Length: 101
Image (cartoon, rainbow, N blue to C red; front, side, top):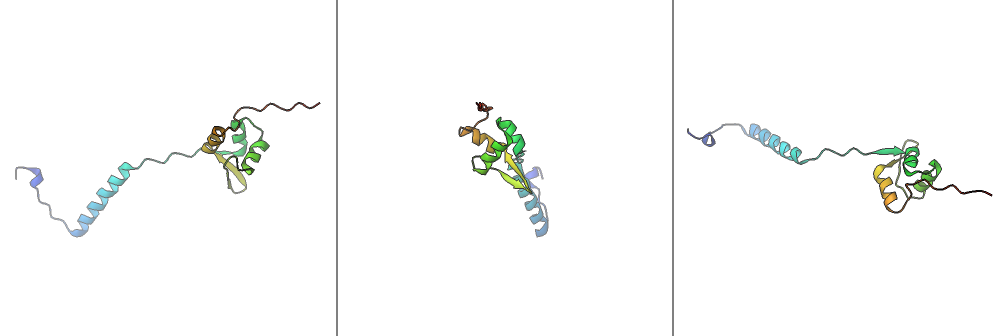
């Protein structure tokens, strides 16, 4: 045989199935991207990022202005939720305190 493409290989059906399954798995995995890590902040840290008081950030979450979720009894906010809130016109700058007379 002069050409390697003319090589004849003998294998069982099970061996062929295993080989095909392995090659398909390799092909599928080569196209997958690794998952992007999700940045999650407790409400207190989200408040710091937004430049607002902790209670204000909690109020935003309770009103549905910032998407949040609970793990146990703690509330968390994703970076994407904070960015969406700011993009909609929410505050990321410290607010001016009201002067009392």
